[in-house]
Length: 417
Image (cartoon, rainbow, N blue to C red; front, top):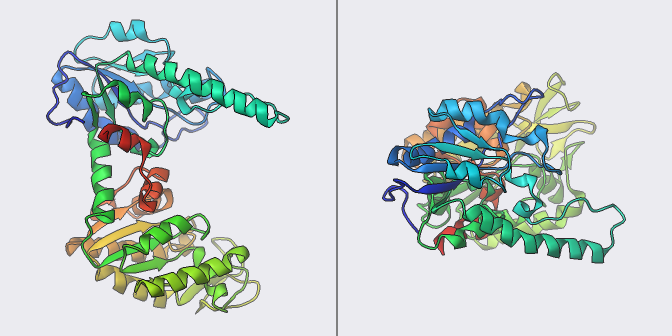
């Protein structure tokens, strides 16, 4: 494994896996270029060294090849503008040898969407709904076999491999993990990936206590592995968002029409018992901002979280819970935040998430390390304009969640081998 800072790309062709899976409007215009900007330091380093840059990414979930709706050609002008050079384009990622061979030092080329080929993900396509298990197994085996050739072909374009796509690091795809074995002495993390890996390592392995994790989300079932892993590491675990009401009902509370996983009540009780056994302070809301319907303009009232009236539903935490959460957060030295406290998409129910965000910022100012990750949390800190006030905002949703579970991510492991 190489260090990108110390590596000289002069005259070398560098295959850089980025995550340019950016949101587009109905006309193919980029609505948020954060992911492109995040990769610029790595791309500019290669060009400034005099390297020959090959940019590779996926976009969306295409089911055919080609699919204009998911063509990376749509984002080429923005990438060229941000990078400061005219980026050339290869319309077929699996047949780009001619375009690669024409590259000169300091020039850049973007490959067409890697996922136009089923071999990138290693998943078969085009199976009918009535396909038998044997048909599915045979199709999967065939794609896996051709995936090796696809990976080898991508590797043949370059002299060095750089993975700067943390958002796909949890996938063992051709361009995110398998390709690395073709570059035993010339593989490395990009600057963005390096930051992500270091941030996760800091909150999971190099912890300064007290360590507080704030876990939001609607379903306990989707966070069970994360919560169980965190219970072995944290001092405080704040469970908030829709999960609140499953825990509240499990302990005998009245939750009205609030979201609840009725089949996970026993699981909620088990997690409470595990937290107690491990000496973890598991913090739940004590009051809620309840609404008479799921609407920004609904009638609202503050009530005890275990006494929500019939036909009403909890939409955010209340002022007592805000104070409770903020006090815990402000006393922390390591903070992991994944998930808002309520339906923050509605302005009427943003206050709890705003208070949590402000507490994380204050703790960070006082020396805490704070990592914010997960789509909704990232959206919240951006919406509230506080991203600069936390230590690190992760670009990886699923990848970050799997890392928090303690799972070794294929894209990271392949570089470290």
